[in-house]
Length: 133
Image (cartoon, helix red, strand yellow):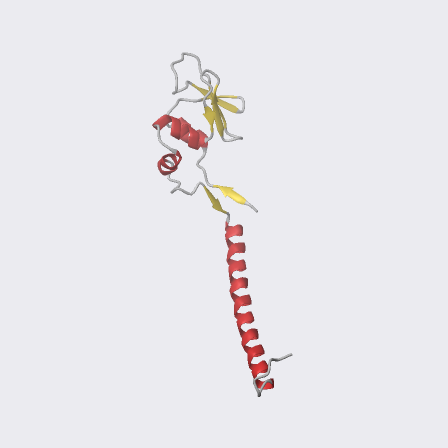
């Protein structure tokens, strides 16, 4: 089952609040969650995570927004414009679900027709009220 993450890029979000400088593959800046003079906030764009080596705060973009604004999970999703659906099904998974629903609907219609046919056949063979064998 493939699930697509629809989270915004962590670098874009954190750069709105902190001046970050690239050092190698990672970005560094001053942590917003405690007072410091030396950058200890590290953003890893490959993993889409952040961590502060000074105060220990870390996580994903949702955790960052929760800590920054003091909101709960749903509040962070709203602020990020994720409409309360952090993990939506991929288009492929959605298509598979639609195909399964359609298959079940058709199967139910077939079973209904088959049962009707069998009832009709049983009543035609059973003119005198006897149970069919």
